[in-house]
Amino acid sequence: MELYRACYRSKIKWDNMRLPLPDEIDRTLLRIRRINRKAGVTGALLLVDQHVIQVLEGQTGQVLDTVYCVMNDPRMNDIEGIIHEPVDFRLFPNSLMFFRDLTDGIAASNHPVLRPLLDHPGDVTRDEAYLAFSHFATELQAGRLTNDMLMI
Ligand SMILES: Cc1cc2nc3c(=O)[nH]c(=O)nc-3n(C[C@H](O)[C@H](O)[C@H](O)COP(=O)(O)O)c2cc1C
Image (cartoon, rainbow, N blue to C red; front, side, top):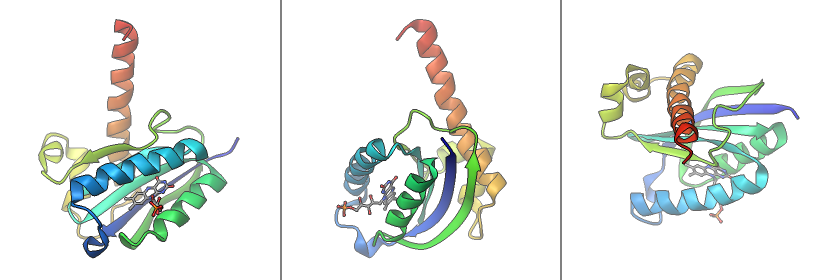
């Protein structure tokens, strides 16, 4: 099975939010995790000030269909592709959509690899995106190892 990874950054179109932001996020995550489970798509979504940055992984066709859905979502604007490539493994194999809100800057002040996501009014590079998402992927993996050792 060929695996594919897509990553993009998009501006949030606040006027098209139907609910207050925390409710909109909860509702959207619930919905997209349900869709992603059916499509075999996994990934992560980071909320960064006026932008979201998302990585999507799965079979090529399913990932491209998902990107298409996102591009047509009225809440998204000015989508910039960062990564589009076949890959050998998933960074987020167990996450139907991992989510972190980075808007308070605390995580970024503790972890320098996250800073370029916040600091940049310009483009986020492929390497910066990989470093930031790998940070969370490693964190998830460490949690899994601990749980395995503790048998929880
Ligand atoms: C920030 C964001 C992330 C999204 N991520 C996904 C995703 O991972 N998978 C997916 O199928 N759709 C994703 N979408 C697209 C929407 O979920 C999709 O447009 C929505 O489900 C449309 O259906 P609805 O209007 O019936 O809710 C995303 C949309 C937004 C705004």
